[in-house]
Length: 505
Ligand code: ADP
Image 1 (tube, rainbow, N blue to C red):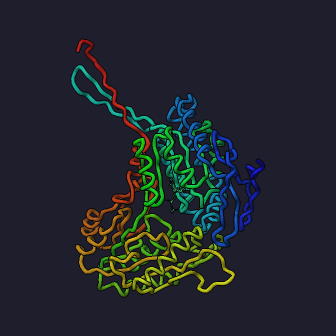
Image 2 (tube, protein in one colour; image 1 turned 120 degrees about the vertical axis):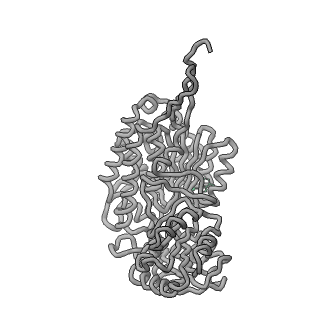
Image 3 (cartoon, helix red, strand yellow; image 1 turned 60 degrees about the vertical axis):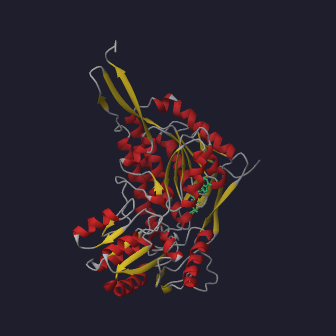
């Protein structure tokens, strides 16, 4: 079988050149997939193919899991002092820092986000996450518990074992960092599967894992299709834990598969996050943050504040200012232009999905006050997946555009009268990921923050995310927490040891 070369020369539209691995990264080496199956990665701004990489079959997943299992017991990892584990992770963060423009180039090209955003935001997040968790490696202690004078108990926090991690395409490298950081800090070994839409940067990360000095088999990286490689990873009997970020529908499938062997799971899924603007808020700030909360990253954000609820007396002004902010800020273009705010949607499938939701909103009777279709309209020759930032008004709470996650630059803005009504409507959703509240009234800000059913609340802001602060959802937005000290819970298990101090008792 000839197949693809394991390393190919790529040159991005910004002129950056590098050797792109195409294989599955198992035991610190790139290998071909057993079936020869591949995935093509597409530049969503031009719809041209960037490169193809190998896609894992169930057999390849088994090879990767076996490698992780062997590494778990290998003294070079198992006996490695926790401080040294942290040092390896710190080295990995340094390598990411050194290759910041390479990673930003790859994720911009593959995902469609502007290069300057990938460079400044995604890479900062990935690097600081690895650094943050490198510090935790030697700080996860158990407890000593006195019981009776004759008995003593203590707990130790041990790794869970082999962890299967499945990540999405909207923040390819930083999602890998969120998953790998805490898992490695706690001494687990990993098989991580990237999303088929963005398979490239994680393979370059494989190079850095090896260069940083991680023992072979500790981190195994595969590309592959969700239903094949993803499902095989979730179902593998030697995988002790599954951590997933993606859609709620896929999370449901994963939970079902994991139920067979009662696998420990962490899920970070979808959202329809509300943003509440009270009439005493700083309107300029409220508009600025609420625009960013839905239009940044082309709306491809699980925490996007996609339902904006505005108090009635400032509603019309808010909508007008929101439209003007789109005009002034949402410049649409390719990934390489410094002035681009919004790039193309990641794939044809996402582009079609977002456009079909826009059509649905129109047919449901909502009013389009901005955008409302592809960008540019009636384009010919322009083949990228660009969507006009779209605002709907005259939306009722039962409309599907109000209730369902669209995952694109589409927002509904609705009026409310009282705080009570705002909270009730904000909570009228099956999701519970993020929520934002704008007010200058301190008491109201904290009261509303406490009442909203979500894993995170932003007061006078939107989308804040920091490796030191827990991230996750309630209701159908997820199970468990990532980031912060809380993120360690997902990757350790507590063992209780009882000691008999009085030998005759
Ligand atoms: P989206 O619909 O936005 O592409 P998904 O939730 O389908 O999001 O994908 C997120 C990740 O889950 C990807 O890595 C994908 O390959 C993986 N995935 C999709 N379907 C399954 C599945 N049935 N089992 C395991 N992983 C899956």
